[in-house]
Amino acid sequence: MDSLEEEKESELAEAQEELRAAQEEVLVLQQAAEEAAAERENDIASLQEELCRLRAELQRLHATTAEYELEITTLRAEITMKSQRREEERREGGDDRGSALSLRSEVQSGRGPSGGSGQCILVLPQGAHMIFINGLNRGAQTELRRNLKYGDVGQLKEECRTLKDECQTLKDDNRQLSERLQLLQLQRKGSNDVYLALKEEDEVEEGDTPLTQWKDAGFGPDDELTEDQRAGSYMSMTQQPRTNCRLVDASIQKNISFEGKPMTPTSWNGGFAEVFSLRDQLKQAEEKATQVQRECEGLKADLQELQGLFDCSQRERVELESELRRYREELDRLTGRKAQGSEADWTPLLVVAMAAAVLMIVPSLSRALS
Image (tube, rainbow, N blue to C red; front, side, top):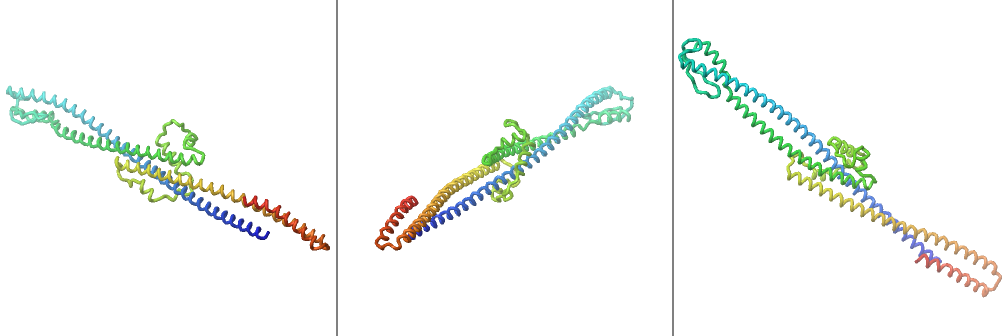
């Protein structure tokens, strides 16, 4: 009986040791799962910060585009006004040419406007040839100079060409800004898709989806959100309380950051590929966390099974101890009753009692070992 008790105690000690090792392994796996979850939270936080930065850059580009459009509109209005003024000056110049030709005919006929004599050299507008007028007095010369003062049409043409060049330059700048804006919008759209996919995967685990949150905010599934509403939703998502969101991985943030350089198709494609690479890394981390969780659940099941075996062994041990006490009491009672009997009579009774005890103990031991 002592050997059986020792064997049973050794088995219980082994079971307790295995239970302790399993508990330690479960703690290690739980810690690994928590670390993976913290890394995923950091990645999501870095993506949210990048989205906010791109949003601010897009707003700045919108403001710059509005300023350029306002300047272009102002220049167009100035060009229109100068064109109208040039047309008026051209019409007035035509009238002045008619008066000059009439004066020339008078000069050729030998008469001046006032009958005086003299000679002056005048230049007609729009590159007319030099005419020599004889017989003009001082009053006629003053009148001709006043009527022919619009000889700066060439200067106006030069200014118009300059304004056209500036307008073309502004158009080119506006086109470049529009292309850059389109690239940023495409990049933001791709980043939004990645962010919404990651947010949806994260909230599916928590029992809630981004679509439910947008419905709660008053948006339908097919409604087109304005950029201010998108910005508000992104800022509200960014400001949600998270325990580990402040610890941002510097290497990941460096990989997805464009360092404020001008966006080009090549750099945009590279950044988009980096975002998808980061998404793959997040998926791998989630798969690893899921695998660790499954292993943890399996270890918990094994732990429960070992706990059940331990409880069963404890119950059987209590039963065996109670049976041993009962048999000892029976033996003591039989020994006291037959104390005056012969030794030959007492020995068979003891043998029978021991045999009965063995018959009772062997089945219980076989059940425990099985």
